[in-house]
Length: 403
Image 1 (tube, one colour):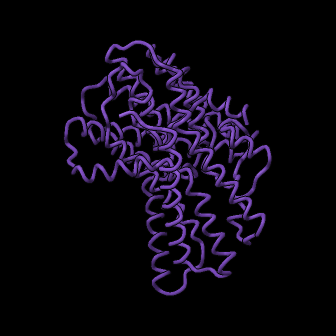
Image 2 (cartoon, rainbow, N blue to C red):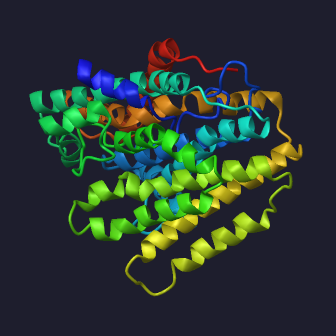
Image 3 (cartoon, one colour):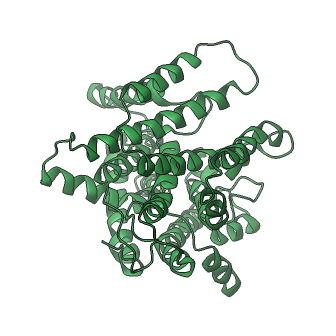
């Protein structure tokens, strides 16, 4: 465990779909704080909520009984299908997860760009890694332990559910990799009770590599960075021939380019004083939609997924431009609610998978019957309770954002 903590602390990583945008957290104490961007808070909270609601609907798999239960199920199916039509790349990542990575790149790199524009030299790397570690690892390890709890109860008393059996697949090596946060570079698929943490591990790696990223960005070598991340993205076409596609799908090679798009968007936002027109994200979305209808070719889905990443990056720039121009009118109460969802978004993202599974397991082994509305209610309430418990009992204990 000591070696795991030593390695993790040296990387001290991430800020997720999920952290982020306490945008002065990586700056030295004497540097001016980067302006607070509340629209990013709203977007991050919305992304976490969308991921949770999708999983809540999909994993509430008991058969509905009666007219109104079927109506509830059909309503969820309709909303899920709508999300697929307007934003989901075919065969690609969840659109909210892609948006998380774009947000992550933006919000980690934005303080640096703001600092450089204010002519402050230097970067406090020990402070950066220390704060990344305490921001990410306590919640990450708590969520990993919840995954192990799911494995333990399913092994002790099997539920008979194929979904739970799939999510509780684990090996000793996989569990060790999970707790070390190395899933982003370990070429095996890891479930271990909390499959969604694989994307968190990829962001950890991006934060660990950020000093190297800065070496290029500080010299304005954005084309070089773009080529590096593009080659990594294209390499996934070859990697699937030698490694499991499920690992490639959640690797840094696949997801790193979206982090890059977010970091470059931060550069553009700070350097440019003009607001991006809404026409650009709209055109990117139209292109994204149109690409779904072109004939299939090898790598087509990668192109479509990358186009969605551009939609997210351009959409963020458009939102921030409107915020900077005071064109977004929102009451103080609404802002507070949106920012609260943003604060708990990491905890929600990290723990909801094992908690939803544990809720289903408890119903299967205690009631011995499948009650669809009870599964919905139990899963939702358990996820809400676990999110708040982890946020207040773990995250806020170990990490305090800078205001």
